[in-house]
Length: 76
Ligand SMILES: [Zn+2]
Image (cartoon, rainbow, N blue to C red; front, side, top):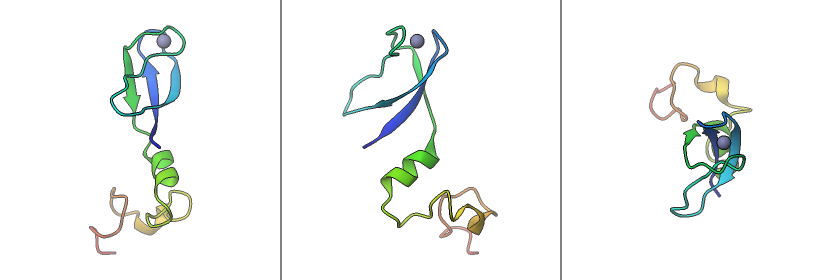
């Protein structure tokens, strides 16, 4: 389940929200739809990949030479 982190432009709060389908996020504090989605790839990957993807906790240093999330592209 995709849980995204958002930043409210109006009250400057950060919050996480589970988004289903085309549901639009609104700020739980001030109820404005003026929110920006933040990229929290680490949390998303560790939650969503059942062990196939290199986890951020254990394998981050195994591919320090590239910014890719897997080592298939850099040949190391
Ligand atoms: Zn707000």
